[in-house]
Amino acid sequence: MQKKTPAVVGAILALVAFGLVAAIPSALYGGYAGVLLAGGLFGTPLPQTFLVKALISFGSILGIVGVGSLFAVTGGVIGSAVGAVSHLALRKPEAVPVAKE
Image 1 (cartoon, rainbow, N blue to C red):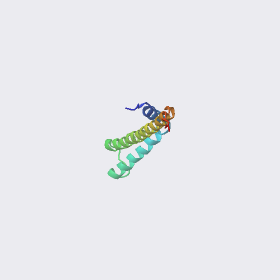
Image 2: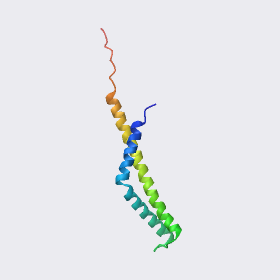
Image 3: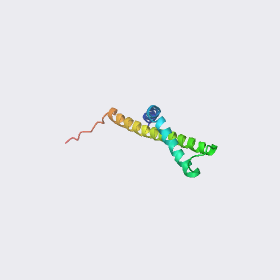
Image 4: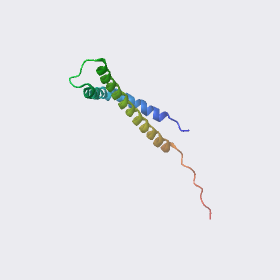
């Protein structure tokens, strides 16, 4: 079984990058999607009911979780690729038998 350390390190670094770069925009766009969904279901202007607020919050949370998981999976794949390439670079070459005539 291969080691999963490079994939885990890549996923952690990607989640840190998500927290620094994309957490607020994903919440914003998810909330906007929730507003559009609530507007389609309840009509505009939106009434101030619990269900409308729940839909907007659900959209915001879904945006954060969706984009965060995308970052984590992409970071894991990149970490696995870097780990595989570095493993190939560190491997010792095999001795090739010389044919005698």
